[in-house]
Image (cartoon, rainbow, N blue to C red):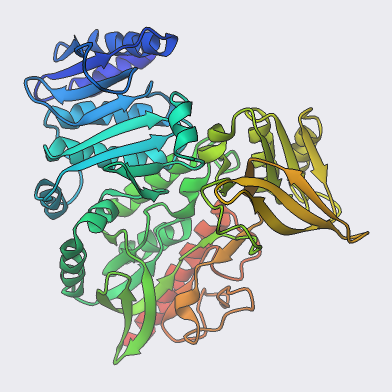
Length: 518
């Protein structure tokens, strides 16, 4: 199953195992079952601390699957999957943590997990190509390792299509708790614990509010925010970052091939490297938080967070990025997660062999159509204008794809459905005004971005699109507020441009602070 080079890399990780672990297989005789067994045998072959066992044939469990536990103990981690692709790291991490290898999360959060009162049986449906799924899988696995009253089944939707169909799952990750829908989409450990323990949020907010005022508070931890924090920290300024997710929206990018000096990388890897650099300088990173209000309070700016915490700072650098733009048509909200999707890499495998629509003719839309064409029966790309705006190399590739077609000059009117699932997309031809409907099981919306600047309305000057207006030094219209990246009027939303915007804003803030002190 694994080649020699991969096995050697696995061995280097498993050398860190503290206590022995047991991988217990629940086979069913299928080809997939054989592949899982082969993988487990490969893993066991490189570590004397890994043993294999077989589940009792009468056990009522998903098959094929296997569990990960410390030898002699019963832990609630089960993979109903062949954990390759993005989930291979989740498998390796589960083994390490089951053996007693310490988790990186803060001690008080881990204690909250250990102290959860109740029986929690999680089922998480994922796809091996989803780059958001590992966050959820790894968080739930850790909870099951730390707390004997927690269990999790990690389920590859492609391996259990009957379950996916019965539960009408059309987006990953989707999590069930004790048999009922719990949440979908990317969540980290703190967010999941907060849903189960209301006191956790209050305790975290109280803890943050006690922090001393910052010299610079950076809002956002994407390319611009990470760069801004690195620059201000190197200047000796007390720097904090408030962010929903370290790495920012770059985590949503599956492949990056135009980042100077790096031929090819993926967004998650690049985002992790950004944060490693930030952490090297001791920046205070406050993740899983969102700024909801920014107002002047004496000599400081005061940021109110979604948890209720309040932070004070002399200067603010806003690098809050942007989010996917919605179509804003009838049916979009109703069928989100039930046919309407925004991430082709995460949700695409759930539409294998089906007809789908992509809305948007820029790079993201055309790339989505190309990727989906390899999985789906057909792809129809709907473009509002008369031509595609994507790079020429992408356009040519799409035009040469046999099961893809492009429809131009239209306005999407509504998304159709049967009350539970999407069934099609209705558009109006601009030339004739005629309404037409494309039958589709999925609609992937790729029409650009909306700046995350709602909390700044009335505080700084914004364009009609919500972008922050800045000068050449990255300064916004309010004294002490600077900005960089996709949330500003910078015309090109690119990683390398965001890096420069973050650096400019940081240097502008440093220069402003020096003048205030003088």
